[in-house]
Length: 482
Image (tube, rainbow, N blue to C red; front, top):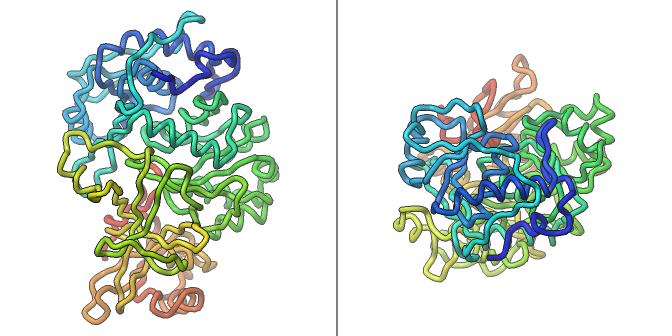
């Protein structure tokens, strides 16, 4: 088996690898800790990891991968019912836990092993017979349409995605990544922890995101920042009064946003204040990363760039026929094919079969338009963000971006609801900057129509104090109803 992390066995052993707050490990120390734990895990097919934002989670997942064992990261905030489902579905052999953690009753029957981040320096993981196609992670989807499904990610997918990102982002062992993302999702765990370790670089995890932490770490030598739109929105809001944060972002080599679309007005505010552009990439649990704006490419705000090396991407009509020419206007569903894809939904052959076309394209459910030069712009999810109104197919995302350009709008979401004349009418859900002077429907409709087209204007507006979001900052549109 080829190790996913050559630096654990190579000449960079004394380099910093991981830092969480005031706790850190060099590559030599990480090799010792993971090597000791890997020896204990090798007898299992799968192990669960209580994925807190701590050093122990990184050690546990790397140890499992070094042992050739699949890791199942668990969200510590999950409810008892969801935890019970995930454990019954994945049947892990044991649960790896940071010492001193109090666990809920749902995991009480599973053997617990406390993670020791210390080991004898010089030790390495035992050799494993794992192959590129063998499972590396089983990551459970959010379960918006039923119980969460376990996406089985092979070792090959992790290696190819991280290597493709390294090429696109010019990511090297000299880079130091800072982020405050949770470690039970692909973004924080695969990109944010395994990515730096595969490159032989280092990561400084903030524990919890804060603009102060970002400024401190970037000003102390970190070169890259990963975040989600809510984090970058907080950064954009803070910049005007924080010269230290302006300096920090201005000195960063790469600012990357993902997991949801970053509103164009936040792109523009950050660039205006710092001179740096945030780049976006597009991926999902089942596919890891599909596209990205390249470090040496044009950072076009509102797009997720071009397909990564090795990834095939196409847009298709509702009947599944491919869109043959790209004009930046025609909306289609994204389908992808390549070595970055998951192999199956665990124990769900029906769902796995339904997710793929007969010739191996994965149906993402994401709707997009594509420019003639290959740049992709996501306009929403097929299930919740594609609005069919007056004979037009409209993506909610572009209307949301237009609404966010209105000075009276702090947050915005757009949905469709049945309409006897139009088929669906466009509904705007607004968090106003000032609740006492919230913009009216007519004002917002004129604002959108002037920027996009008259048929894209909202017909209904609801004013809220906050939009419902999940732990990655994505708006939960199914919770919005009149």
